Length: 270
Ligand code: LER
Ligand code: MN
Image (cartoon, rainbow, N blue to C red; front, top):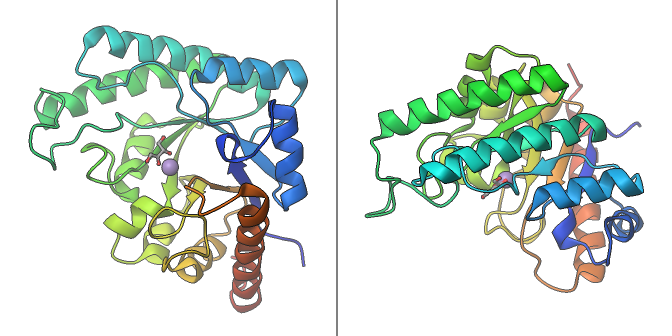
């Protein structure tokens, strides 16, 4: 039976001195591709283009944040995101974005220094600006939801879907990260089913953010949800590794493929 989803892994997790070597090692471990996860991302995207290395997506890696406490860093973020959209259009790889990483109202003294309303308005303005650029250059954006301890603006999958939907653009979609969902969602499969129409990418990790197979996350529920909405995109491992990549990555990809096969047998795709 044809596998429903392509499995990727973040490039930082794969041994290799170049993206080409990382890509080839990832395929040898059983993955279908790599997601770029570098800082600065612009350098990695340029290397991928130069060496003809395909990428499933680019994960942030720009300067600053859309709601950075420092206004200069907000401008730097938008500049880099625009450049990454141009490179992503040539690579055919979407750019994963979040409002900010590591600033949250859920922990004392960790906010941005603005009100939640002001943060939301700044994010809305930035997202609108980069959406218009994406449309001009043919790039794609994925709005990710990350848990309450990492930001306060795009926390649940329905938040990410709402932000993406508000942009009303074929170039902007939502993405799910099951590690964050395991903290924020009551039912992983249900939340995925409700994201139908907007969901365009998935990050995979186990409950403690080690590689899938090492924790108690309900991958059966995740994959059943994806099957039920007829998802046919990438699912990419973003996690920490419990041991040597050569040993743990082939084991984890085999675990994922077994889970997917089980769901594929049980749930007819819609
Ligand atoms: C951060 O926790 C995360 O999940 C990344 O994908 C954010 O870009
Ligand atoms: Mn993620």
